[in-house]
Image 1 (spheres, rainbow, N blue to C red):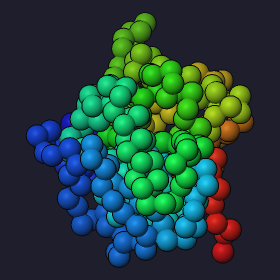
Image 2 (tube, helix red, strand yellow; image 1 turned 180 degrees about the vertical axis):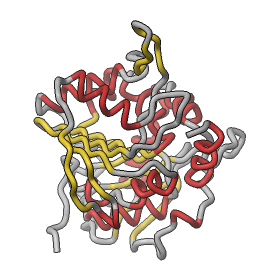
Image 3 (spheres, rainbow, N blue to C red; image 1 turned 180 degrees about the horizontal axis):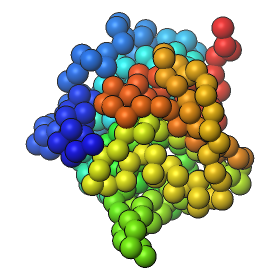
Length: 293
């Protein structure tokens, strides 16, 4: 797939103009999921929109948080609520490709500020006690949002504090030449490899879903998933299973707390299906959730 076509897909889910305000939501009715789920929302002073589903108790005790990067906030919130996660959601969007996410979060202070601002507002509203801190911190990203995750995992304290990570058709990398062939640039996926190894050992949770869309000039999500699996000594198993909302699961690999699922499709619509169907894989994060129906 050409860079131009990839940019057009990115425009559908997050816009392509780096000059847009940092709190702007991607403008796309195409990924909307109808009415917003019931709950409380507020914007953070720096960046991000916080969502507390209405099924959460009025007092959260030790709260858990999921910080999601890239994707129309009402869609992410709908999928989060459908998963029934007993956690707080923060959705962060910048307009642009992965660099628009990686640049701001290369400042280690920004993520800590986002967490602190969210917690401060929860305290102000009486949902948590004044001395409460986050219990579990999980990250998720779609498409270009991996840029923020890559920046965060490079910071030891955030790598250590991240209990679970869900990559929804999102991890890309450059190529390097090796013995006459091009390979995934190991430096670009260095900390994702480390995180995958931690998941195999059962110390972290890592969930990856990917399509088979081929960007062309750089490694797509299927290639980066294969790189992570090779790094931890796993080979994906071919399968033929029904996935959510018409998605087709064609490969699977799992060990410890690592799960990598390949979903058929090479188009922009197939890519967007990963954003529209976060719910099932969200439930695999190390968080409490409502009982299934």
